[in-house]
Image (tube, rainbow, N blue to C red; front, side, top):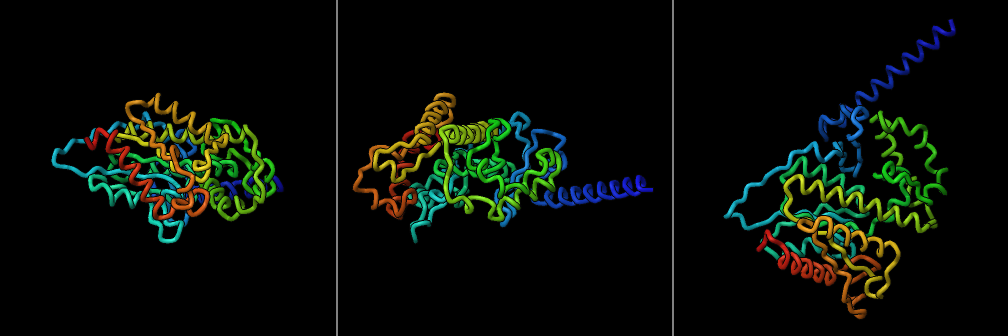
Length: 336
């Protein structure tokens, strides 16, 4: 009798879980695509929540080879080039009062460019590569990508499940020291590999202040920094390969300036970052170009261009826009 009840409740539990999973996939299918039904069966299918408040959810087949390259037809009468900008608050702008953004100022300077800003406050490369996938599947491809995702690399050190964790096989020190706050997420890692409903719950829990606000002190090792930059490298390389596969003509990695650049300081993370940029420019020499705004800065201009350590005021955004525009006009085959 007890065995019969046990199997009855077990079957009932399985059916409820199946129903929850099915409803979750149907609901997520509405703002995404039919790849949602292959999640867990195809290991290349990944689930990413960029912003739940805006229902920015991404379901992607991470195998770029599964996408046919789109060939864009040249229109000799078309003079305006579409560009997409990706970054965090320094690209989104409007942090220092009415300070504008370098994207908005670039649009004012160059009437041959139509730059759409996909940046948002706090965005890191994990989130931006998800937005790039989602946008390329839903919108017409741009000719130019502007990738300015430098300052939020440290976000990875507070994530229990960052995007390339399986590839890097590394747990950051901050996460190891704060597992108490993340215990509810660690029931069973295999659940996240097969159940979309659990993955969605995981994303919701991550946003209920079980994150950076709880950490009063950063515990950082050199290995943390190396893996942090490596995660950025993997995401950026994926963005480059994806852009090439979808017919994008030029990919610019933009290095915006900060206080450290005015003081000629180069933290370990930025040394590794620059090493990666050198590798990327060699590996993708005919596609990727580096726009470095951190060189030859006058110390006396620091407070004139910045309102804090990393955010530009109006003068700073205008200056950066001019420098970016000058570089593109000199190096872009699309504009020349």
